[in-house]
Image (cartoon, rainbow, N blue to C red; front, side, top):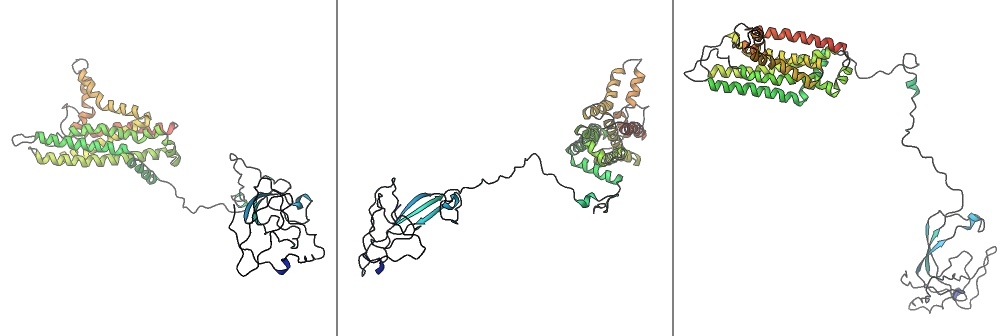
Length: 435
């Protein structure tokens, strides 16, 4: 790469041809001719003559060509590898600073001296008018020490502070005291936990939503079907139980999944770890499930009862009938959900417990239909019908299938007794068995 020619400065009188060379100072090395080393791989170049400036004498001719070399043009760039410093090998000048390995040095070459000019001292740039980029070789020396690599599979061991080692009853320093207040857990904490669980799962929304839809929807359809100026219905609230009977089929899965789903996913281990008292856990589940089911069922029953009382013709319902059609039926469905919870605790399997509860609700009535035609089984079939879940629910609304069966509030008491027995067995099994 050739750089543009720069005007050369006017030589002084001491640089004129024929002038005597200055005497070098004492102790300085002898000057040597600044002849450039021959470069076999470069093409011969003509020496460039700097332009003459007006008002100045012409420059003296170029210096003689290097011995055995080729002329070089001023202002060129040459990439040259620099040998290791002589100081590193002991052959050069002592005390010469070593260059860092792998560096590149850009060195400017001075223009050649005119003929008869004093020779440059030893160590001056070698080639005239060139720029040399030199690469420094790594100095001779011991190889750098490598740091030992740590294996990522073996993390560094952490030392336990001395303050922690001395803490405790037998140590020299007091034990650590947490700033978080520690309180004894009670039933309220378990209730808050179970309420968070039951309202945050989708099964609760779907089962209770379908319960309300069936109860209110079928109840309104029955009121539209039975309404008319010429039709009288007695009791007026007696036909509101059809939709509620189908709604009980949605409450059964909800009661089973409250505890059986935790056994299926293994969450029951976390529950009993957080609350070691299993009686408290089951009590909290029963209270939350009973309260939620009772409120949702009672509100939907009130809507259906108001619609029947306003659209159907017949004698006005009494206070007892109002109470049994709203609160009594709500308690009946809530007790049925508790019975499902107890069966789920005993079986600890969602599908098995749901199947067992569905058979308990529907199977007695179906078996009685097939056995009622036999004289020897007629009495047993009649008892099955009288104490079946559909007949007890209809008896609350004063519409029993059999006249000799439970009536009024008696179906509610029968279901409460059965639920208490099964729930007591669930408490005993939960205490004796492992999770």
